[in-house]
Length: 505
Ligand SMILES: Nc1ncnc2c1ncn2[C@@H]1O[C@H](COP(=O)(O)OP(=O)(O)OP(=O)(O)O)[C@@H](O)[C@H]1O
Ligand SMILES: [Mg+2]
Image (cartoon, rainbow, N blue to C red; front, side, top):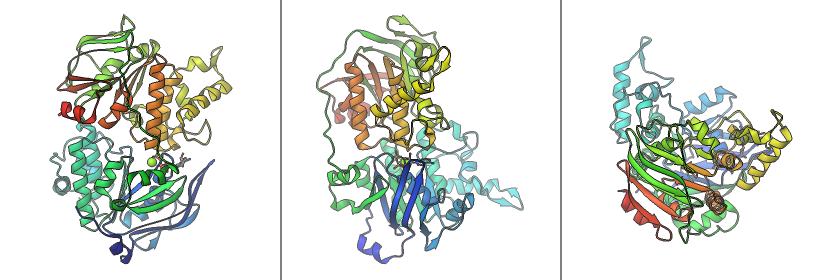
């Protein structure tokens, strides 16, 4: 593993520098007099709670956002343009970013996506051969064996994520910014990504790496800049800093302790799934979910956990089997009817089917059940605000106002709102697909607490997570999905990460 020492970095001219940058949004000081600098070949972690200002700082570097105060230098040159001009300027100077939310065009091929906007051409004619060759080269450099002519819509989420990363490598970047790149990758793919990052660094490219996974940061970054409330709390060398120290810089106080679930609980059966088949991934699944139970689904990425949840929710076609909710066979009922029966579902991808970005946080929360805020057929604004405020407080959502467009919230705060929606709707059976994706260390514990509270009040939850370490903190029971069927069951207090991992493989 290449780890450049800070002593060396100090002597090299930085590839990017931010001086005294301040950025205000209505009701929020997103960045407060921020200074930042990174050298060629350096891998820097960028850490901080949800809403700390990480993505905003990144947008300053990519030129997507202009600071109200201060300046941004790339390769020693200050960005001067405004609007789209500024992004183009930063791009020309070599800044490339991979975002939390994917931005590929599904109906286009991998090659077309890789060269989006700068397709190679000869005399104005698209040079397909060259595009294909360079695509193969770039994908191969990342260790990906994908046919560049494949349409992006046929790729798995993990493959899409890696193609997204491949895309930034086209056009010889000087700085590559990865905003939570591994949240949808399986362990083996994370390794692939790390390899790619090390290659970039070895080639002198600076990498900024945003993540909420502390273990990962140790594997990939030499140094870490920690943000808190729009300010830089400090920059440390990762090898010389204890995780607890870094977390303290993030939170401003010590971390709470994790509580493992001590005994498995559960009452009457509220959901029964029998012989469920949803091709191609779900090959015959049987289980029951009990009142007051938190049931985890573990399994390798792509094993079909999402497809199973969607089948249970009535969002994916089912070829055989039955779904019974509270004693009633709902197999033939559409999703909306199951919701009326008390089902709640938060999808894996907020962008695709989670949120309505232009609508307020309040609208997004009450969207799950308008009847609660409607009086005589009209939505009552005060009632909507009051209801939404209750959820915002309970979930600890950081937003300037209840009506702020949800799309402007930080990633982790959007995620909390999506879960909050079903708490507001008082769903009795909650299906949560990767609910803590993009959520900071403190908020994760908070979400576990909320889920345990829901269970204690008689709600039932199915919890899917790729981070196996979190299952012992929240689940009464865990079922392991493999090749379309459940192959193992673990009961609290005997749910352990290592055992789960072994059962998944
Ligand atoms: N376009 C915008 N309009 C209004 N407010 C914004 C906008 N962009 C960011 N903010 C606010 O600025 C603050 C910092 O947000 P930012 O997205 O930078 O946080 P983050 O550190 O990336 O968090 P996360 O870990 O959740 O992704 C938040 O309070 C956010 O709501
Ligand atoms: Mg962010």
